[in-house]
Length: 257
Ligand SMILES: Nc1ncnc2c1ncn2[C@@H]1O[C@H](COP(=O)(O)OP(=O)(O)OP(=O)(O)O)[C@@H](O)[C@H]1O
Ligand SMILES: [Mg+2]
Image 1 (cartoon, rainbow, N blue to C red):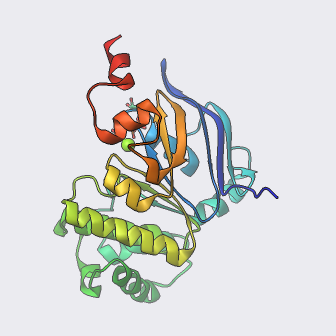
Image 2 (image 1 turned 120 degrees about the horizontal axis):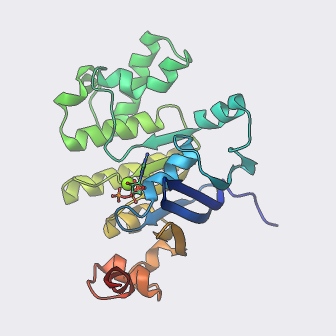
């Protein structure tokens, strides 16, 4: 029996002016799985995720969550789907003018799903899940280190108990130990929520820790999908070149053209 994927993208295209960024992205993630997306800088990874979130409207294609095309549904339905999605942005993207606790519970507060008093308690609870003291809730994003900002971003992503979570470069800019800590938190949070996860990363150690499945995007298309554990020895020359950080290979040859 085939099950409906949690997320399915088919033929998703997006151009900005004459620049084609997504050239028919096909991708599928089963519920409860964790997919990592790899690809060079500017290959369209963030744009892919933003299309799913509704921050960018594709020119063509289908994006289904639980079998329903989010591109054709009503605004209300789309908002309901959005409520079940969590997102950790590439640069954490916290609101500088709000204290951490309001950042963490931003969605719940904005939708009046929680009182301000309850939001403080909820923020403390979620901050504890990412290894931060409740007192961090009263700080402002500008008072946090990069690693703490990532953890607050992660807390915000999980605060509304999403069933699908996107992580855009969760460990970029962190030291290797903090990177491993964040990866561990991601794996724990995803497991605790029973969520489906889609992560973008350049970091192969991180990809193997977070993902069970992997996909590589190149020139706006998914050129390979497979098991994250096989990264580096997948048998696909492009993927292995990327995963092993080798200068010579099909990717550079294309650059030379
Ligand atoms: N809103 C936008 N308007 C115009 N061009 C855009 C927009 N968003 C993204 N692009 C372009 O689309 C291309 C892909 O961008 P994207 O952010 O998806 O890259 P990426 O794969 O996430 O790269 P990185 O690894 O550096 O984060 C880039 O050339 C970028 O300039
Ligand atoms: Mg990006």
